[in-house]
Image (cartoon, rainbow, N blue to C red; front, side, top):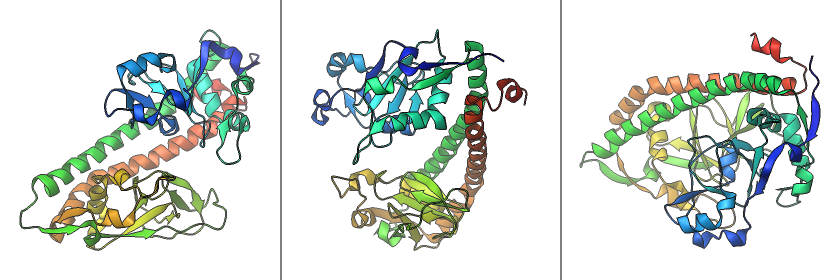
Length: 379
């Protein structure tokens, strides 16, 4: 059994391998453009997404080039939701980070990228990052001199690679299922557009979203959200916990009302939407709510913000959106036709949750040596 050393994080980084995003005065909102070189934000680390809201000109990029992301960088969220990590892949676009992100570049002669990523993503690593954070109103990651002292266990490189290989194999399967689900979602959107936009009958009634659905406020949970109980608790960004009771019978649809504005989430089973969301009640009584789901996915809710301080979806504006109202028979035919590949999407989500649970169970055990890599690798 090989010996593991413990090193401070700062000693595991390459030269100039710790880069905090530029001060706000260096990257002002007014300097952003509609197209150009993307700015990586908190959400790109938190959700491992690569959709961008803000861009800069080549001239501005040249001035801020020291904040550029490179392949195999780790980007870490530094404000509010602290400590979420994403790896910059080879095919990710060239861009710079915002002030709410941190770049870490490991010295690969000492520690592999994937091992450091998995350690910082583990419960132990995440706790160390968040404990090195401060702020009573808005939590911020601690100063560099504090973060760089975070202790990191460092096995020999072959053992690092073996541990990372086990965890990466699970992540690769999860990623494949996510990509399949994006394809299934795209198929539904394409079909919706074909049936209800491109082939819309001129005789269909002109109406508004209010003719099709109600938007109902979610409910605040007074009791602590409990994990391990039956029903998912849904916030504006998705599942935030579980509870012993449900508020809405599935299938159902939730829309982000505060925070993550306008995210549309489909739920097959009973759930509890909290007060940062709306849930919908259909007025057309179509089977399965798939028509309503893909209709809502076509609308730009981000432009319906009613609160400049905290993003908020204005219900009246949303419900006044003009639409063409198709016959009920057309809606039900669409729901029946799309249900086959949407059921496949549901099966994929179940597999993803199973694989994520396995990965999240293995991760701390591997990092603490409770489970040895040779035993896991042979499974």
